[in-house]
Length: 228
Image 1 (cartoon, helix red, strand yellow):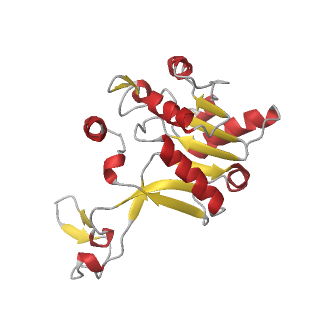
Image 2: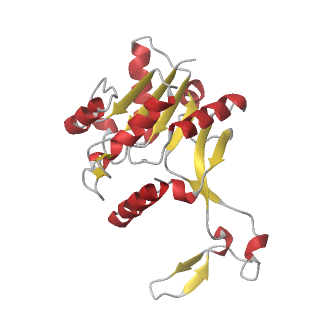
């Protein structure tokens, strides 16, 4: 069974400039995703899809392939992850190199580990799922979520839960923002990484961090150091 790891890393990060290759505790953050994929031993190819010369150079330095320059169409702010993955898969299909399974690993996901990728691959095969990805449970019931108007006045997102005990409410989860392991054929059909046949692996919130701001970055470094 052939597998490919695809790491999408364009150069146009806005909230954190050059985010995908910024130093994270001693090496470019992109390197962590590459090394996890390599260490797992699962993949026939580990590639980085990028439109950026410097990112491509760093990717190759850490052992990934950069077989082509990502198209301008798939490098703008409206391009989806699915668009980027399909471009890579189409590139290899044109060379008569098909894949059975793939994983999309985000470049700013230093908490991705080889054993978690292996677990996801095994779950995908065991349950004949379309997609497998890690999730984290919300620390507080989403049924009790509040919103504020321009004056700070509160209202509930969901009615009827104000008097409910938190322990009686159903647990909710959110995407950990790390990776998606998928069956290539089904993905090419659905063009989606979220189908009715998707399975989640729960991980602890200390083992992941979405990085969209400077404070997120600092928290991610603290969490990572704490793991060590």
